[in-house]
Length: 364
Ligand SMILES: *[C@@H]1O[C@H](CO)[C@@H](O)[C@H](O)[C@H]1NC(C)=O
Ligand SMILES: *[C@@H]1O[C@H](CO)[C@@H](O)[C@H](O)[C@H]1NC(C)=O
Image (tube, rainbow, N blue to C red; front, side, top):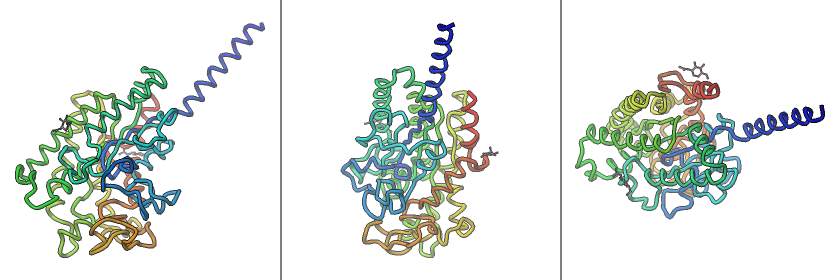
């Protein structure tokens, strides 16, 4: 009698314990890519590609700059919120130790592209192959913490976000007239080359254990305030950069669906961020913005020239601007983009949206 009571008691304890750990461990989240998703890695690097000074972060809960290229939250932050998790820390943050490693990590670095020669002017940034090396190092650290079997489960059960490609146009092919890449490739051939290199990166991510990977395309590259200021005479989107995005994004989706067919599973999910951003670029008022042409922070035409600094023009109400600085969406625009990632139709998410993924994965 006494011994069976003890047995029941210890069974209940075990059940409570496993329930407890499940509660603590929301699904891990890993982020790879460029400034659209960097949440502070570049703060630890000697590079000009950084967002660590006022007024960046002015609407972040702390009201202080974090390294995010936003007035407040960025795309990964809203995805973390949807997962019921705290935001991932930058991989280079000294605070990313112990149990915090189990939340995941952000490896993204502003300025990088698919290609190693993209963003060369920013010198010390974490290029894609290096982000993957850090991911391997991360996995070793987590294995040391919870054992290799649980570490593998944590990675295969994780959600991954990959956002890269825009810089291969604006900070490479179109960085200067007659750039090396534009002399080497016609635009269609360059896009094909980018897609083939991107494919290799994604297969590498698969080899490293990634099994649910959201892959965003580029936004409407020709419509950002920086391009309106430098390539447009009448406030219309730059036709050339729009052509680049228009070639790249559909081929990216096809490449991802092809990879899934080869791998026999829906590993890669295409997020049509070009469509989401085009929604508010074409019709800002319908999404609560007064403008999608003028950046909130900057100078020159459309506030599209140079960097956003403490000396720039700064709009009083960031929520009515679709663009925070000359290249990056405002927090409010990021929220809309993630809303579509979560519950958009197949026009936005292919083959399915994140809500569907979360529901599917919670059943397996
Ligand atoms: C990028 O650089 C890394 C490290 O030098 C190298 O391993 C990789 O092959 C390069 N990628 C391309 C596409 O050249
Ligand atoms: C996307 O997510 C929502 C749930 O938030 C769901 O109702 C909807 O049917 C999904 N759309 C598609 C096309 O899968």
